Length: 264
Image (cartoon, rainbow, N blue to C red):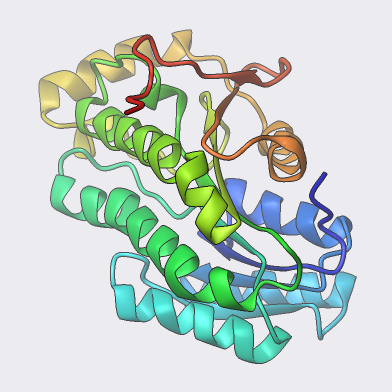
């Protein structure tokens, strides 16, 4: 079992929602230090101050980070390593929902994940982990494990994250890096990812937005606390290359694709 106590973590999108809940859980588990990486500087600094008051001023830092910009993401790694003398865990969580602006959605939700993984396994976690193993946890989505017609671009991006987790988490990569790559695929979770003004502004077009709004009452929300608890289990216990569905407060279930991985 991977021991979180004494480890250093970098959490993207850590100023709110699932990311903030994960950051809190890591600190409660005894993490040596946690970097809150987020694009929102105002909220990020406020959250950082609150966590410092609760867990200690030397336990938490905030780094303004645009995960879609690899140099900005690398700065977050560098600042984390400099502050805490290492890094063991990356929580690749930053994300938006905006199918209408799919260029930005792809840049943040997918390119950001790729930037985080490659920086982690090629340089920072590879060389600066304190123990024998490091961990990268990607936030995918239930929408990436099945077809959701009202979020076609978002779902496709999350499917790509599922595939990337399984591919780079494969044993051929784990054996050379000793960095375990896993993912959580939450169902609909109470966060600020959806706009208060309605779905039409962020869905691919107005018609799809109306369909989403008409179906919204069918969605069953889960609180971020459930996802945070499940993420701790995944970080501690689950094998590299696996993806775990967190939905409706039930026990996490491994996502098994219908087609097996290619093995030469």
